[in-house]
Image (cartoon, rainbow, N blue to C red):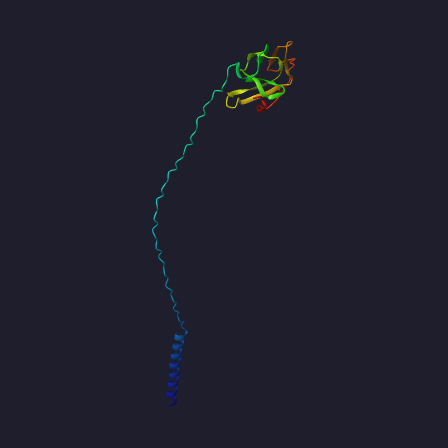
Length: 203
């Protein structure tokens, strides 16, 4: 009887050991974690079609400026010897004028006491001569103005190149009734002049 108990006890211990090993085997297995899968949402972008608006080209009109043609005006010239004014009396004196400048000239004779008023004005073309006759006895002052394009409305050249008066006066009497004036610098000339403005020329 004692031997059987011993065997039974051994068998029971063996079964317990086996059961315990099985349990330990199951427990020792790692628990597999189930990872939570987050779903990926793919956003589909909506493509909005672009409407192409045609560009309208507005034509640019370039205006050509109106060019006024320039009409070349021929300068007005008078004939040599044209008397523009004469309030001078009659006498026997003469005055010869030699215009050697390159412009037409107006010669004026005044009374030295009133140099703003012309007693005689005569037109002489460039490179021309003219003799004033019938000058009465007296004392006179000579003025001249040279230029281009005579203008009757203003009684003057539109373009004035020179205006002067003779410094010395001319005396006409029984001893001297002839004088000459050359409108050009000459060697040994004895007539001095002073420049004036066109507005100072005798009227």
